[in-house]
Image 1 (cartoon, helix red, strand yellow):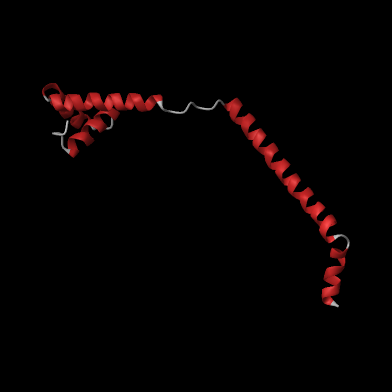
Image 2 (cartoon, one colour):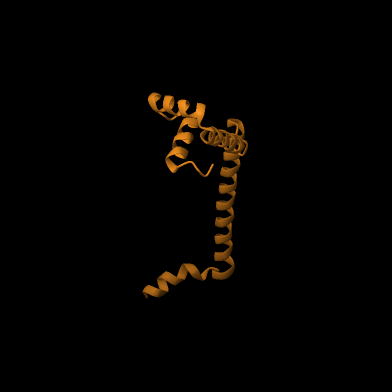
Length: 108
C-alpha cells in the first residue's frame, strides 16, 4: 500500500465518498479493475469508514433533549436562588444593619 501516491489516496477517498466528477469516477473505476494496490486501498478505506461509523454517538431523541434542557433550566434557577440567598445571608450576618449607614457616613 505504500506504493500509492498521495494523489492516489486522495482519489480513492473521494471515490469512496462519492465526491468525484463522473469522468474522474470512471477513470478510477477503470484503474480499480487492474490495479491491485488501488483495490486494496479502497477496501482499506471502506473498512476504516465502517469502523468509524460504529463509533458515532447515537442521536438524542427530541423528548430526551427537551427533558435535559428542562433540567438544565431548573439547575440554573436553583443556582441563582442559592446565590441570592447566600448574598442576603452574608449581608445580615457580616454587615448587619451598619451597611445602610455606610454610604451616608462616607459622604458626611
